[in-house]
Length: 289
Figure 1 (cartoon, rainbow, N blue to C red):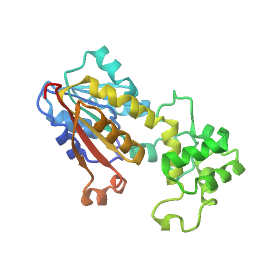
Figure 2 (tube, rainbow, N blue to C red):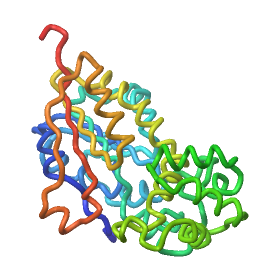
Figure 3 (cartoon, one colour):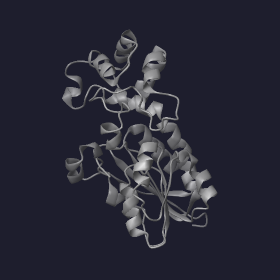
Figure 4 (cartoon, helix red, strand yellow):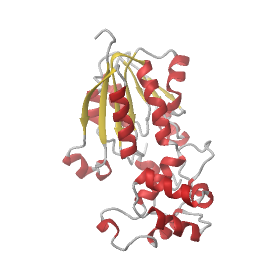
């Protein structure tokens, strides 16, 4: 398998899951399988992992590796509880959600996740989904598009970007969208710290894949199927996800927040895309505690 992805906070995540022999875990975001493999190294000889991978091509890549004790499903993690019940999987000692996008999606998928190339405006993890980035940029009303980009990325030039997008319609490719964005913002955008299209592309990807809504749906399910003493570990990469996780951990009486971890300087140096990652972990406590 041609790996192009560096798993973020791999050791920290698996350590905090408290993986031990013969325990069962759920990886809601298998991706390239980095976290999954590490769990399987530690929970043998009878411990299993139930893995969710929504992208069919990524699912096939991992499935073809024939990892022992991995029960892999090509499904969104919003069906966590349903899948656990159907398979009779458990008891579950820990659940992991790595909400980051795989480097494979950016460099290899050709679905328009990257603003560096010239690809279709798609951005769907799963092509069974109906909504695409092309539909959003070409068909959404001005006020809705501005709201999306502002809310999902904190882009301060959202209105100018949207005005240019509307003037440039129809936009057919990522290259055309990037050109429209560049014409909307100052030449010294963010003093060169990030590409002008970074935030707009992030907002579109979040909307296309319903990322915030899906996270809201899965967190209560994760709590419900987890056994007392089990851990939920979530790695988030933008403020909306982080706030959602933090708020859920605080409001759920049966959860005790354990830790919040960020990547080391060494990890960020090796993998700059890890710089925005925040790992949060909570433990399900017994009602009798």
